[in-house]
Length: 331
Image (cartoon, rainbow, N blue to C red; front, side, top):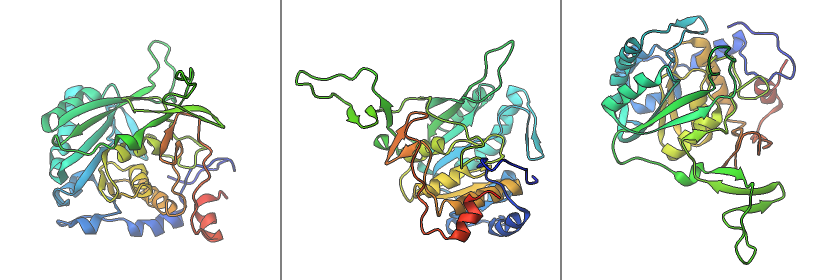
């Protein structure tokens, strides 16, 4: 993935050849059974099928899976081709069954898909786990269609290994503007608060998410990965279904969003990514998180509606001019 010429306003994270050479030294490759401490907080650069047999058992608290959807898509030269529903289901089965061994009895599983993949995902999850819900989130980006409805939503299936699992409801409430503020007989606000920025209430999260923004060129988390998920999306899942110090695992890491957000939120992490450039992008973003732990749309323990509360000052800690230039400046 050669460097592209970009506007000075473009915040997309890129890699130089020198960075790839440096960061690739951090990548792990498994060729024998491994212990948890050997892969904790690392990126495994390897094909899932060759790595999975060497993973430890019963160490994952939260498994987040964002596999290639049942679409024809190019991932930096690695093509994934659309197939029949039955063939896609078989492909999921070919690796999913082997992942069950890495999960703790109290683990939660989230699997991403679109409408063409969800049938297969449901079938496989139902076979191994207890399905708890299906989240649908609005992806506001997308091409229009002339003879069909514009495809602007995706699914995330939520399942658990058992009936004992983590769900931190207070950590994932959404701060919404109050359109019709209600007061009691004494004129006091009921279930909402008045602030200098307006009237807000904290609401319980639903399985319809309309507050996410897909990363694009002016967002500091953006990369050139074609299916990158928002950090805010991962923050919701990680905060809800894990606790600080828990282990979060992603077998299709891509450009590293899962590991980055896990790090920012005080969890341990590991991901597998077979493309070297994407794996190095993940490592660069993980390094950047040492100096900037902000998550767009999440502030002071609260998630904001889209396009509100997004002006948080970045938490750059103990950063030198050289580090500022390395991670956050555009040449």
